Length: 345
Image 1: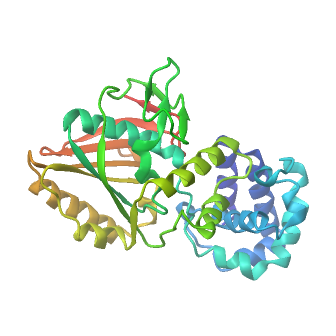
Image 2: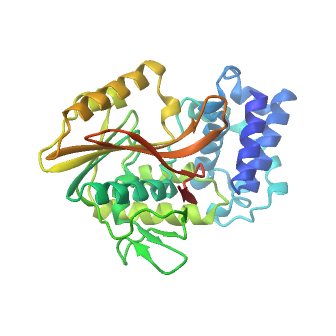
């Protein structure tokens, strides 16, 4: 557990959150010392690294801050106007771990519901490739969709450094200079006619409770991520999408292709939470749908997940696309864990 917490602390540092980097390192120290953090995390000693135990804990902590139930820690968390000073945060966090032990333990059984809007940079690029290969109406389908924010990705705006752009001029979500490398086709346009998805614990982004939950998983010292989330939440009230409570495999088993459209199945940074048996079911179902695809009813499958390019190579967050008929897999590019920037190949 301690090793995983330290790894997560380093990941937060690498991804630009000095506040969480410092706090998770101190949580690891406190576990070793048998302090309040050890009491909160007891029973999770064998949790695997990909379960993101540290982020589960901090999601609960941030929720208490957002609800104004941790006033001393709030003076440090920038998401509620705090200073952002990592050196001032550990003492009030340690006190919160002791005073809210049972409530925070309840958060450890939840997968982080980040619904990271920045990952739409990868999806939008993949949609550009699909639209160039198969012009016409698109059904956008997301498994592990959380609140379905990225089911509205075609309504987000990508602004490139050279002044070119993709997406509506008036979008409340703007991804500024998110792409590098060999850019996707910019003159294509995905005409999304349906937005559906699934999640084992879907969140309604149009409710106060849903907005609060999603915000709690965005690291408090990352202003641009919070801005993108707020814009996506506003857009969710305007653009309907349906997220069903269901596992990925069960949901896809009920999904069929539709004449006159291309069905685009997408997911991002959720694969690690699926059991191996369910991963295999998803692969088989996609292959079966692909076998049924044709000129009038197409299928595409896009993902942003940590993968090995070759056996023994390091993990990279690869943007991968398959389009049927054909179904050959292409690595389109590589992204950061939060999607920005995405470098196309």
